[in-house]
Image 1 (cartoon, rainbow, N blue to C red):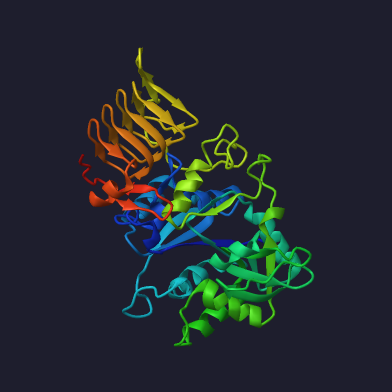
Image 2 (image 1 turned 90 degrees about the vertical axis):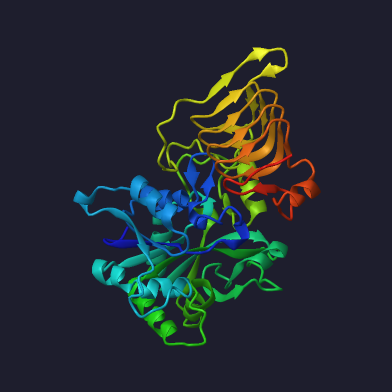
Length: 411
């Protein structure tokens, strides 16, 4: 690890494809996995690797995100460590961030104050484990100006990502393409392509110079993946880092190389289902590389009633503290703190966020229900998609019904 590393986490996106979950919060603040927020994964990876000076750049609907960072991510200031939210401040004029590169350029004082050798820039809304120190080690050994974290994906699926085209050595980046119709294959593996993970390691002077050039270009979108990285690729100073080579302590054979971009309602739902198996595809129980967060002071989960068909039970599910399953049935679901499932209710293949109440004899399946919702007695959600749409609920392309935060549910 170099002497000085500054972590920058880009957390200013609006996350419109996750609406209505982002109607009242920034995308990185969206709850995930019962106890966590999406940003906890990036911050945990940085902190576990020993990177303890981290700035989180925020913009849209950032109150709950700022509060989460301030109350959860308090590092030891006596040792010079910090995780701090940095809102858009219009330091360079009366305009907000116009892209991820502009967000860093407008926050250049952070780099000037810290004077780091290396700047590591991570996105805030992916679910994965990674040891960034291993990526930094390759960056320093390879002598590149920027190192791009990439993951092999089937070539036919790579059209949805930024794609890293590498040379015959599998490391030198020769092209960086945004959602190409014909993605380049990998050397020796033509049916796969490198998808960019949106995580970068920069030499500080290289990043600063690229940001200044980009800021002077009125035709630029001022985007890290769309403008800064292609600029450095054209200069011949970019290399790729294979995420699958990253060795995280405690990783199981099932979750090695796991990475999910939860940018849509369906991918958010699918990532939750990955948690629910007996041997989960992504294992939250790895205490050698923990995902850190604030755990609310609530009592343990409680399961009550065992008489006839009134039995409180949950199978293949994650049940958070403060939950009461009172004579209801839960299957393949994730229940966040404070959820209550009442007698004879059924919750199946669903994600239920904080303090939501499922009434007696209600049915919830293939659904995401945001915080502070009450599903009345006998009402069904997720069973009849047309009826769900008629009641004003969002139904995703994959058929997942989404009830917004505090939204009224009627019969």
